[in-house]
Length: 596
Ligand SMILES: Nc1ncnc2c1ncn2[C@@H]1O[C@H](COP(=O)(O)OP(=O)(O)OP(=O)(O)O)[C@@H](O)[C@H]1O
Ligand SMILES: [Mg+2]
Image (cartoon, rainbow, N blue to C red; front, side, top):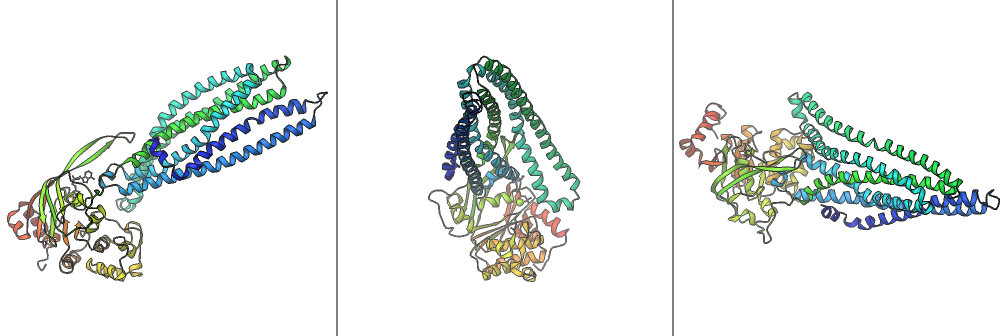
């Protein structure tokens, strides 16, 4: 884990090294200040032949103290700037690396993380690591050095008096140890609760229209309240434990001051200690105890951030399981598609309370699927919900890799292609496709960045989208709101089809992509496909017979298996499932248009 994290320090190595160096210098210089203060008192204020004061010494040691203070300020500023630069840079690199890695994820990689979990990891977890890194660079150098220097100076001034703070350190150490062990345990649960909170926020805000349509505001509020309350309770527990730190610390510090004053007075009377030395000992003891306290805080933070580190590394170390092979084929010959005895199961990760994946269950989705599609053919796939239609389609553009068997496009196993080349030639319109915020043109060009306006127009004509676009006030420059909120479901689908067509693919897969369009528009789209782009192989997935009945062949899917393949007429005669669907949708539904 540390190696993965440290690799991301990258170009901020210099600052990361300079920070502890400057911090050490700062500590070293400031460690002498109380000692010089002692000299001002002893040799300056109480100095001189009569003990009435020696202004030369006051000025001399005062000047020295000022010089040391400025030097320590200089080193402090340097350390601060460098640590800010190093830690923010570290966080920047981590986020960048995570984001880049997430972009390489295949669908099965994505299945292993929840999107809210990924957001928490990229935000809260990285911020905590940033703070921890800054602490490691500065505080974890400063605190032990301060501790060592101050102990050394105390022993140097008067070793007998030093016994006092050794006793104090043991008391404080034990108390802090007790608090730490309890808080670290509690904090490890905090991040899982953050995931829950983010999940609730993200889902609710993304689906706010659905929430409103179903009048589920109260339910969603309760869900959010539950997640927020769980986090609140956990924080109250940890914070109230941590709040004990300060009173304990104060108790020990004041105890020390009383003990120092008591014994110090005796030592001064006995002539073993000067007033100045006693004053400086007060300062050193304060430093020792605050450093000890700081050390324990650092320990808590670093232990806590180990949980953050683990979560971030899970994302960084996740290897994309779909990549291009070394000698990848870079062009797809034609639009033929072949499934040869393909089986596939989803692996569903089951996470425990701490968000750690404990086991994964296998859910079979496709079993022994075989069929062949010739270039330019239109294939319909029909079947009940959950029977594996989308799964089957996702194998063609290699969104998931087959478990067994092979899928070939253009006569070549999809695993042998360069993934980008394959996906450019196999254009899939996902079932839950989305539009991005930006103009219609931006969205269309998302499929092909250098598409001309004319190309975009043509694609929109094919997808039956040009009519409604031209009616919009700004035409192709109309701004689409996030997730296509200002276009209807059917318009959104047509824009997605146009976007996919712009890639000029060899295989086009429509996964239930016209279900929000009226029957007439859908028929026009399918007509245009047949007449204007006859060379593209079209795979049309639907639950409606009228979407697939004009296909060259129709595949009937049932529980992950092919139940029958044939033309509309053949299946009507021979396939029981098809007959049943036909009976329910056409004969009873009555929306069958005999002209088409
Ligand atoms: N990412 C996933 N992880 C685990 N199981 C999944 C995943 N996606 C789909 N499944 C399961 O695989 C089976 C087939 O799903 P698939 O999405 O292929 O069905 P479908 O035929 O497209 O259904 P629909 O018509 O409702 O879109 C279902 O039982 C589904 O629950
Ligand atoms: Mg589906």
